Length: 252
Image 1 (spheres, rainbow, N blue to C red):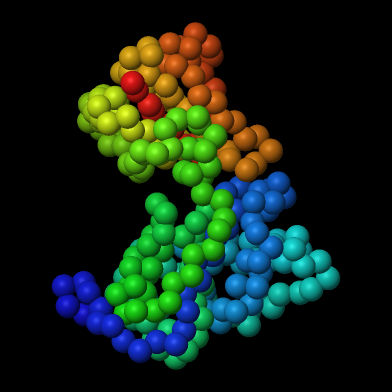
Image 2 (spheres, rainbow, N blue to C red):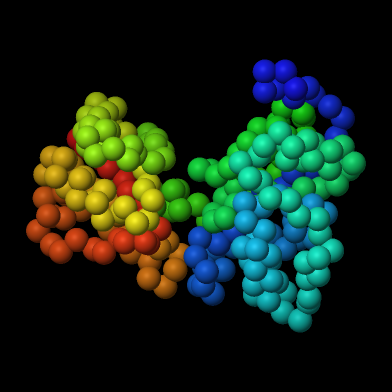
């Protein structure tokens, strides 16, 4: 390894990017394409953010898509991503060199999108391995799809600053940038701080700015609404505490 880069090496193993559910419910399984089970069968090794969650997902998708067919979870080799320390990267490369197909699984949604699996995918590209992304639920894209906001120009900003002053300043900067570039701003917060973030958005943004709140996507409690800030202020704010949420801002 040189300056964080891996040399192009001979590998015969493939890397499957396996989507998983956004919510632990039967409804959420409907967002997973049936062919995901074929990709799982083609893998010998899995790198997961949380092995326990991934194992539970495999069992559920098997029952949902292949009733009557069992999956032997312990037949597969499992590794935790753990933010992809050098030791994990080395194991990842070794398995591909051995000709084993590797699956990368996020804790929720699609690997590599706001997800620590991205670092392993970066390594796979650096060494010239075949990377196969598979379609599945992405809360970021699904929220954008349902928001009615600009889908031609958008950016995902991840988490906003924790510091109150810095967070409020960031919200104003996003609003200004959205107006200047006609760009939808997409961002998230730790679920237990959602309500405070919503309050900060409503206090900081202009009344005509649009805000979309997308909560519990693909679950039975799914809630996706876009309104002007002025209209959000007129109603009782939805309780977002400890609920996975995506926020989208659009100013003209």
